Length: 144
Ligand SMILES: CC(C)(COP(=O)(O)OP(=O)(O)OC[C@H]1O[C@@H](n2cnc3c(N)ncnc32)[C@H](O)[C@@H]1OP(=O)(O)O)[C@@H](O)C(=O)NCCC(=O)NCCS
Image (cartoon, protein in one colour):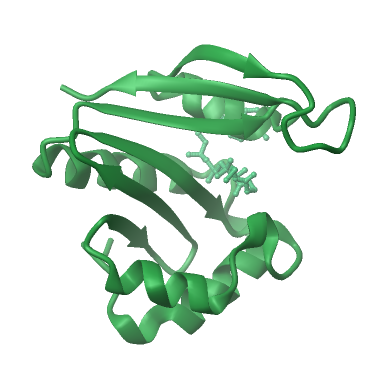
């Protein structure tokens, strides 16, 4: 596990992102956005050859923006390893609370988050503006 990606890894992250989500620009993230996040001390990124996780830190809180693993690497602990590494890095930065939003139909992500101590803090119906099944579940977790 790399502690942090180097600047030159924006292309690799973007390739991982497209492969993991099955299409380019998923969640509106392009190569330039990864390059900016890599340059910005307010973002924490962990990555391996099989996946990555990315959070934005604001004071003692962090938002988990993206986590994804390659389809052929799923259910083998990769997402768990990425989350654990991310939590360690966030704790080192004195982050006390992590929050996120997830599409309500994303069973894999919901299960992963629950398994790692996130609890539901709210719902936003039709949050993504695409009708039924596209509401958001809001979740949060305290970091020790
Ligand atoms: C969500 C995601 C990151 C999980 O990654 P992963 O590498 O499969 O995670 P792990 O192998 O560490 O799984 C840990 C636990 O999460 C839960 N889980 C993961 N995928 C699951 C699924 N498809 N169905 C039910 N539970 C699931 C299980 O409890 C699993 O433990 P188990 O395999 O011992 O039962 C992966 O499915 C993914 O990349 N999805 C597409 C991108 C995405 O939607 N990201 C989230 C929004 S940004």
